[in-house]
Length: 257
Ligand SMILES: NC(=O)c1ccc[n+]([C@@H]2O[C@H](COP(=O)([O-])OP(=O)(O)OC[C@H]3O[C@@H](n4cnc5c(N)ncnc54)[C@H](OP(=O)(O)O)[C@@H]3O)[C@@H](O)[C@H]2O)c1
Image 1 (cartoon, rainbow, N blue to C red):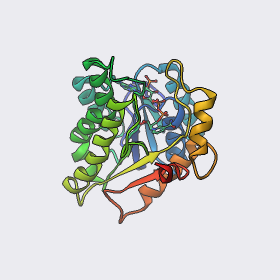
Image 2: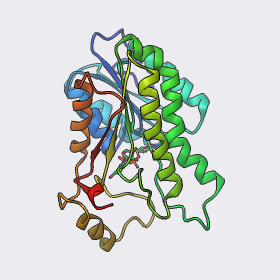
Image 3: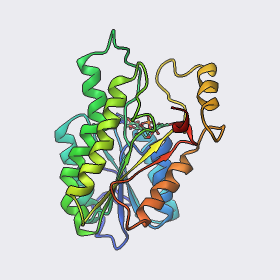
């Protein structure tokens, strides 16, 4: 754990605290910056991106001392999820917001998809959010907490050659609604379903033709930005009468499905 300033545990925070998984880069980092700017103390979770995560914490702590820490965990391991949850609560003695953002995303054509692929894709996108909610439910309930799940605008209709990923995101959408009831009224649980926000970074990625085809089927006619997702997060946190809802932030791409 990278403590805000000293190396020992930080004192209990009067500020609300948010844990953002997979927050070293891209959308997770942007959500962390917006939460921090809104006055949250942030816990930047990472798995492999230690340097980027520490750089982000350093950037945030430079604008407000002792307001950001980093915690490492591989979310495919239940013991590490449990440990992450316990460490997250002990950082500032409270937790108000859990953003389930971490994800694996890569192609798995039916001919070659393996049990290990399913374990990784289901684990990172669906099981980890479930078990984090389990471990954090009491802490969240103490502060009228919020869970925000990053889903995918394609989860309702699937993507050829990405079946386990879209299965996992569909499970996460289902979990959002189930837990919104199970954790009510103390904790609200909502989701955001992004469309094309940042192009994927898996090996090979999308060709320029595939990107153009995707944008041609996006009513807004352009790729989104991580800020669009962070704005939806902030909206949901302030929307105290919304739970069990999933907001598409996809530039209207679902209209073409
Ligand atoms: N990008 C888009 O346009 C888009 C579109 C639809 C949905 N979404 C959803 O929005 C969220 C953010 O998207 P993104 O593209 O910014 O995500 P991303 O860069 O693909 O992944 C975010 C982080 O997930 C972490 N992660 C992966 N496997 C992990 C594991 N086993 N344990 C712990 N952490 C793990 C990685 O952390 P480390 O780097 O530290 O290893 C990674 O940096 C995701 O849930 C994604 O499915 C994004």
